[in-house]
Length: 142
Image: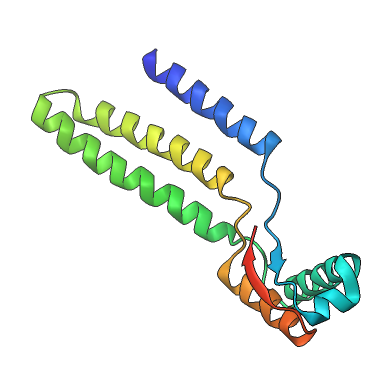
């Protein structure tokens, strides 16, 4: 019963993070001569253009395979740790391992949802290079 409450709390937290959500991160431009000459409205349109080009080239913003792998890895590590803990403490090993794996998977899912605004590395590199080609200087992503 106690684990059901934990899972419900984690699920509600994940849903809240998803609904409130941090939108996808976008490049931050250094105010160089080119940005000063074209203005922010044109710069934002150029950012959108570079993002669309990245997506069209296959440099997607999120790698869903990585998210699934991270969740599975966390669940596996937690199951192993739970089994060891259960064996040492004399608890039912399978039940402890299963509960630990479930908690880790729920926690990982919440974490992955929270960081879902982080673009994939290849996507960032593509957009950065595209913007450099247009005369901008990317100083980071936010």
